Length: 308
Ligand code: AMP
Image 1 (cartoon, helix red, strand yellow):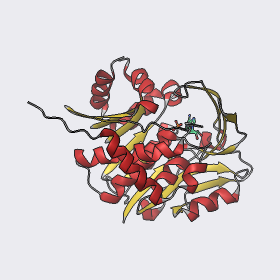
Image 2: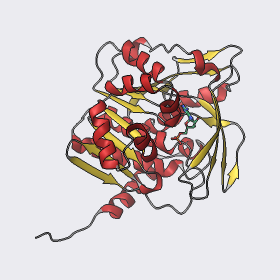
Image 3: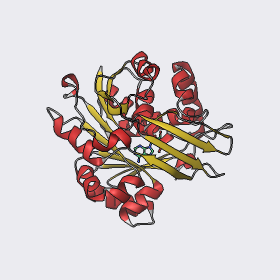
């Protein structure tokens, strides 16, 4: 069984979409990554921090999903990271209204000894200094280091982020962030520029318009499944990353073909995430639903055409 180490926020989110509003619910990059990766035969652990306002039932939920929480620090008297966002009518864009780092502001991550030899390290969205510290604690170079980040860290900690990017094999980033990071409007040029910064593989997420995978001269595209019901896109990017990393940690194969399959796994799981508010859909998700949707995915992208 492959080992997957996950770092990222474990958070309270308050979300507003055209379909409704939530107060503080379970969220965070590592949360969505962990829930998505729990769909695979993989041993995973979350490195993160919360305050003592974080309910024990959420920690139990991680345990129930076989996610090791020994490196999820609970700070006595501290407050959990809080994010508030509001989506526009198209659901593809959003405004961040509040980001409170709270306990994350001075978190020193400690990688559990039995995860220092993880096959895959998924550096989910959080301070790049913390991401770097996790890389430095590994006993040996993992087979794959995957990085996800967002504009908040580009705006506030660009130098440290650039350092981490150098060490990563795969970056997953959304289209606007790829443009911001490289000052290139064309996503092809942006992907080329990012590959020069370090990662051999660049995945550009385009929300409901799917995801692009770039590696040297190879390009692959996976659509997002057209869905009848989209309630809340929060966590779709992290769920994609969790499915992507979960598949690669389980198979241990880092060929371009298998990375393409990882993109499909990520896209498939992300299509569920958006169907309910927050983590709800991912918590209740069953394997047979995932498998069924794979067939829809295949049918959506398969065609037979005679080429001259
Ligand atoms: P996504 O929709 O995949 O981009 O991720 C949304 C999740 O990211 C939410 O659950 C938030 O708690 C978390 N989040 C929002 N802002 C940040 C940030 N600056 N750093 C880390 N995680 C964040």
